[in-house]
Image (cartoon, rainbow, N blue to C red; front, side):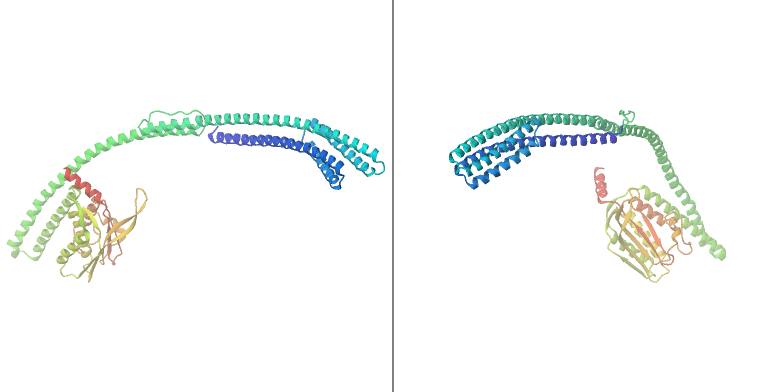
Length: 510
C-alpha cells in the first residue's frame, strides 16, 4: 500500500476514534449529570415533605387562609416534582415514587377533610376536634411514609450515581489506553515508513556526495520511499557512468591540452620565424626597388615607374600586415599589468593625437564623464586609439566630423544563468558612412573589410585587435549602424578592483 493511502487510513482511524471517544465521553457525563440531578431533586422533595408537615401544623394552629394557600401550592409542587423524577429513574425507583405520589394524594384528601372538620367545629366542637387530631396524625404518618419512600429512592439513585461514575471513570481509562495504543502504533508506523527510510536515504546521499556510487540502497515495500530508493540507485548508476565518461574525457582533454600547448608554441615559433624570414626578402625587394627608382628612374618610362611604385607599396603593406599579426599574437600571449585608469583622460589624449594626424579635418569630439576602470594601460590605449581612429577615418567625408564617446547603463542578460543585470557600457559614435548590419559578423575578423581599400585605408585588423584586448579584460564589443548615418561601437570592461588587488598581491609575493 502506498504511503498516501496508509496516511489516509491512519487519519480516518484517528478521526473515527476521536468521534467515538467524544460520543462515549458525552454520554457518560450526561448520564452522571442526570443521576446527580435526580438525587438533588429527591432531596428537594424530602425537604418539601417536611415543609408540608410544618404548613399542616401551622394551619392547625392558626387556621389562616394564607397557610391553606401555601399548603396547596407546596403539595402541587411536590406532586409535580415526583412526576418529573419518576421519568428519569429505574423501574424499581419509579414504582416507589408512584407509591409516594399516591400517598401525597391521600395527604391531600386528609387535608381537605381537616378543612371540612374545621368548618363544622361550631356544630359539634368536641367531636370535630378529635376528628381533626386523628386526621392530622394520619397526615404525619403518611408524610413519614413518603419521606421513607423518597429516602429509599434517593439511596437507590445514589448507588446508581456512584456506579455510573465508576463506569465513566473505567470507560475513560479504557479510552485513554486505546488512544495510547493507537498513538504508539502511529509512532511505530511513522518510524518504519518515514524515519528509517529517510535516515537510509540521508546516509546514502552522503555516500553519493562522498563519491561512493557503487553501493545500492534497499527499502522494503511498495510505496513512495521504495520508489525513491530505486531512483537513487538509478541516479548513482548514471552518475558513476557519467563520471567514468568524464574521467575518460578529462584524460583525453589533458592530452589534447598538452598537444595544443605544444602546437601553439610551435605555431608561435613558426609565426615568429616566418615573419622574420618574410621581412628579409621584403626589405630586399623594397631596397632594390628604391635603388632602381633613385639610380635608373630617369631612364625608365612612366609605366615602369608605376610598377616600381606598386611594388614598393605592396611590400610596405605586407610589412604592416606582418607587424599587425605579430601584435595580435603578442596581445593574447603577454601578461597584463593591471591598474586604475582614467578612461576619459586617455580618450582626450588620443583625440588630440588624432587631430594632429588629421590636421586638415574639422573634428568635433565630445566625451561625457566616464568612470574609472581597471585594466592594462597600454592595451586599453590601443582600444581607444583604434575606435577613435576608425570613427574619424570612416567619417572624413563629412564636415564637420562628429565623434561622441560616453557611458550608458544597459540591462544585459547573462547567457549562462539567464539573469538580467545592469551593466556599464562605453560607446564611440560617429557620423560617417556606416555599414550594412547584415555584415556585422565580419567586423571583428582579421582582414575582413566592409569597404574597399581605395575608399578607406587600413589593414583590416584593428577591430580584431580591439576585440581580443576586451576579451582579456572580461569584456565584449558589438556595433550598430545604418548605412549613411554613422556607426556606434559599444564595449564593456569587467575587471574588478578585487582582481587588481589580487594581482598586486601576487606581484608582491613573486
